[in-house]
Image (tube, rainbow, N blue to C red; front, side):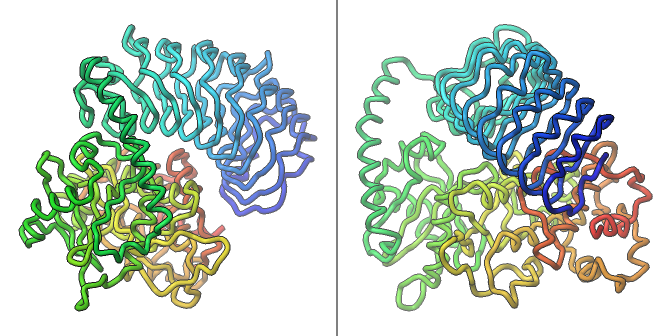
Length: 612
């Protein structure tokens, strides 16, 4: 029974347990709420259960252990809480695929998981699971993919992980793991093709082994005590030098902490002050680049003067872009470090033209730390100059990539799909993972920037808002024409569905190679009879960017699913748009919902599917 990808509401029926011959049940990507009924365990022949991407709450029923034939269990992207029940990993465990990601699960990883000896894919990411990684996990000799990212795991990485014969993908990012990377990852041949240990507290050398030789910087960054010859790391120094460095940090870090406490008390309105203020994002490890500490020395005056000198007083030859309330300059500091500096436009009386935008950008970016969101290193404000300092991204903007034919040809389908997923990941983090949800309000092709590895970054947070649950979130009209959700004109209410709509427009722009203004006009009444019949006959392949060769094989499925999601995002009814978490989960899974050939499916068919 497959009821996935509809808009079913209400609670799961307890009567599913009475279906004694039921072997597969899929009700994913709906709007179901309530608990998972314990009666499910009565359907003893059940082998495949997928309840992902709903609004289910409560704990995972312990009596699911009675489903002795169950090999696939997907409860991801819900609101489930409590511990991961050890009971479901009984001695007769036959699970091969277990996905509990993107919930609110706590507790620790049960050691009993070792009973599931046939487990191939395990995903417990995006929860609040704490404790250590149990060494018993080595018993899962058939495990191919392990995702424990975005949790609160502590302790060291078990050396047993480096000895697992079939493990191909390992994600331990965004935890609090410490210690050195086990030498077992290089002691013997490994099947690892992807490993992500970013944003932990790892130390020591990054192994110079096959498992790590092709790992991009993004997958080990955010570990300030790692060293090595790879990109972004400082060379491993002698023990004597490291000891001296630790001594310096023991003195400096408490002083920095005291400084930040004082800045919190003074508040953001000190932006008006005529003295120079430099705000760094907390402690050294948050900066993600030790050179910044060496260069800036947490001394605002030094940094301020360095930037003035590097741009020769902000002359035109260093300008790399213009924004709504500022000009962006490229500044190469005396150490060789390159940063991007957005200098705000001054008014006649010497104050900021838009202090609110200046403050919004700082509030949003100090709240957010994500690989697909541009990083703010600091800000300075005095009577002469006010500016924000960011990481410098060597790639161009999405707008320029699509406009330039040569760049557009290099921006192939694989890179375009990765860019869409990257923006979705960043927005999902902003909306669902930050302590205060961040609404960007100006997602557009000019505000998506790329680094040298073509990783997309969301930039320009001048119009961003942090949602306050205890006050009004109404606003003035903001955003870029052609990307703004239609309801904003009459509701003036800030919510996440504004960004969802803009993301849908942006996705079509990436697929088509140009802004989809005519297409959006045609589908503004997409679920009504007023849609022109000729529109239903347009082949999907005919709306894609014809500067690129037609996509092939698996990429075809990705494009169809991405197009369907984009259609859902631009629904004129904001309540019918998916959340960015739902969008990101579906983009990541890339399950095919279509049996039609890519070369014969029409845009209207996708539209009809979206209107069901």
